[in-house]
Image 1: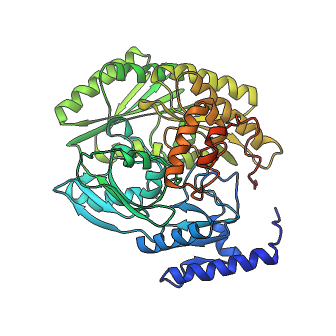
Image 2 (image 1 turned 30 degrees about the vertical axis):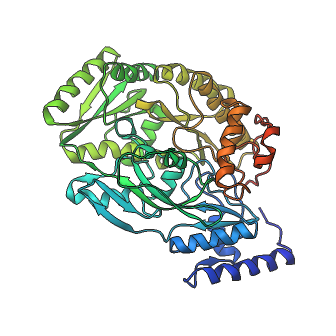
Length: 496
């Protein structure tokens, strides 16, 4: 699609702002002004929408971030913080009249403190990079999104990311001890630290999952865990999605908390096996990957109990890893599920609702009915243990109307998950993708109180505007808040 040429006033304004920002940053390449160099920042992982930012600035220090934000605050410039750009909800989608503040230069591990079992890192360090920095001493960082090789810890904090081991070891919010952040007016603030307990309001809890609406994180203190003595994974095949879902509930109901418990349906299994060759069975309708960790005797005992439960739930195959290499191969398939599905469809659309585990069979059945209704295939990959679903709707954006039909399919999945007691997002965030559905789970009073928190940190609404809230008001306007219920999906956003 051809984009309109910017008028002379916009070009002049961009040039003037770029000149000012260059004075605030030491590196000569800190400000990206040309259209071709801004183009890679026009979208994030949710690629159905795009916008070319006014400018991109890449600060190198907390002081530079502070000066940049203070300048933008004083000049009423909108700011979108950006990490690695792997967001799947449009959280880093830029604004044509806004500045991208990219944190890719914040890529150092600042301190490793094994005595206190924590590490201090900059937000541009990748999730996997933390584990790589400490695994030589037998430690690791527990949250492990499938994109961990690329996603940044700052983005994980923004979206409260999880991963396959979040069932037992928690999401980002359970593994972050402290942050350094910069407010929109340039104020530098520290929340938490190496200590485990904090007094006063839990502002750190407010920041984790705030999607860049409250401040820009410039340093993160994370919790490190000892690697388990033993970890073994099981591949358990089932004749139906319903029987696999019932097994998930039965395992948790028996008081067993696996290190990870993931599920894939037949379309996902076939796509992954063709891509990774992990040895997944192709004659089953659903597959569970269950990892047990701990002392060897405990792991052996739990494997026996899980197999017994699985057989009672009609499992047709059980395979247990016998080496660390084999365990990693089992997980390599699950970690590659998204790119594997990308090989069997021109495009896919992923939503991430969370539901009560007991509702999994019901939701899977309803999803199959919606698939027939919309005439679109869906491949399912789940964090089954905590009920966090990742249905991948397969479509072709080149076919007129198919993207819109896909979005409605995704919206119907989300609405149904809310109806059965779930929520809109387990780890990807609200962003622009789900913002117009916020009214399905929150009433006007709920949203008003959330927006008051936003106003306390950013009263002028300059940080990541257009995300999360259906309609954002200034503090003085909150008494007149009205929620848009999402009848029209993102009419203000340009499409590819």
